Image (cartoon, rainbow, N blue to C red):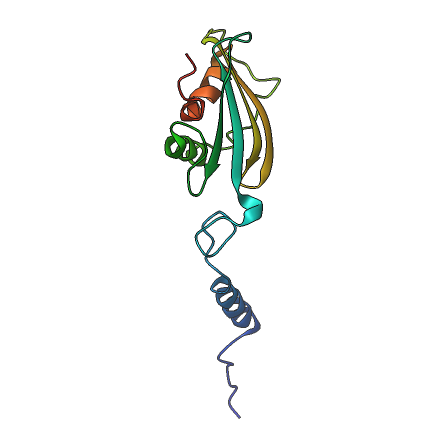
Length: 145
């Protein structure tokens, strides 16, 4: 009696299961909702305060994204800069080695939520690392002068 080779092995079944599961679910746009809009928990609602110096008079705006809005003068550009930046509110690590370049007295604080995550961030231009961090999201700060 000849041996018959099974058409699908146990490993083959496992592969089919993985392929089938990969095709399941909904398409995610990165905002947590298959409809193309952010779920209420993933909304961006920020308050941006920018001062030309630590003692200067602040300019304060609100910013929402998806769709861009609020009182920010360039809301669309600010939302786009935030979307492009990786971890835009992550502070410079305390052990970072930064160039001693002074970029100016400007100070900005950002509070609220970004993609549903609480934000309480401070930005300065006191050294190369802080300048780089500022520049990555510069449209968020408008014209601080």
